[in-house]
Image (tube, rainbow over all chains, first blue to last red; front, side):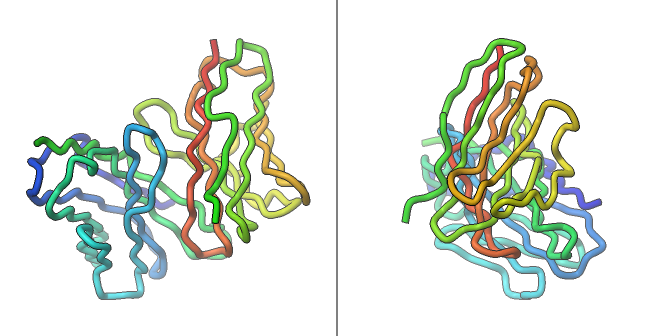
Length: 117
Length: 113
């Protein structure tokens, strides 16, 4: 069974600085998707970024980028120019593309990020 | 295009009562997933449905929990005879096709007294 591990329960960063959140996963599959979701204090789950395992190029979305290391099964999220609104829980998630997996998401335990002025 | 809708946003029940949680997927999305988030934990998969069919319920507790996604109307997650341990946030997500990104609703916070 797949597992997702986020080893940093809490992180903090100063406004305008850069922070990296870690995620590792375990799978025997070669084709899958990885996601980062953000959960602000409102508790809404918001998609931050998606990475397809077959793509070597790291995904980027504005200030958010990932470092995807397939062989190491590592998927870290880098937030540049941190803003107060980035304060949230961040969840890493794995999606199997096997037909029997039905694409259910497997989440890590989350990293609580605090951005300070 | 409205996002995934869930209601109610907050639900309070006494032990032994029934809880009914509703989810309307995004327009054009026929795949619905339910997840549960216990306090201070990540989300855990419960069930995956397509219209009128339960496809994967491997994450659902065997007793008291059921889900449906009728031909017309929202998907319903039903919890009978609730207990305090059912207190959690229940999230619904939808996607247009298998293998596509899932978009989440705002969640229903269930509190069992």
